[in-house]
Amino acid sequence: MVGLPVHEYTICGFIKDFHSLFHMEIEYFTEPITFCVIRNYVSGDEVQAILKELEELKPRLQSPENTGTAHDGTGKPKKSNKGLFIDNYMSSAILKINRKLFGEVAWEASKHHWFFKFLKEDVEDSTLVSYYEDGDYYKKHYDTSLITAIHYVWNEPKSFEGGDL
Image (cartoon, rainbow, N blue to C red):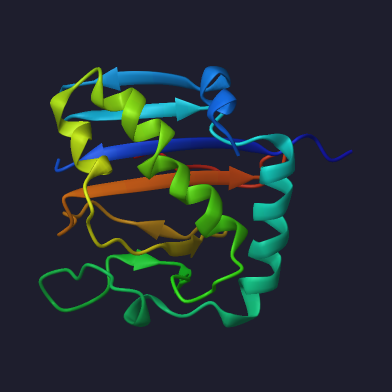
């Protein structure tokens, strides 16, 4: 039996409509860094659209060397997974849903901590879809961006372990 998809969104700082905001649960943290965890960020229909798009993108996914990975002291990638930057996919459901961060979520989050006002600024962003199978990983590393947003999506029952930040 396949269960319902689960989703969670985390916004880490260096760290279709307005009514959907009221179903979101946003938990704020300031230690050890400023971040928030958003639950119920997307509707069930949006999760299904994301999962469909991810299946369509799987054949195009690339190795860590092509997706901006961090490297260890020997030059070896710190991650084992596949990914794809999708910013040029104009009909992307993932990009459309991701843009809620810069509207309703930014407005709400900026009321709780000054840091989140940066979500409302006119800044350049990019979206990397990262696909992990059981045994894949991304070792501890530092991002070079001011804000990193991570959206976890999986089908239940969850077929992997891990995924902790």
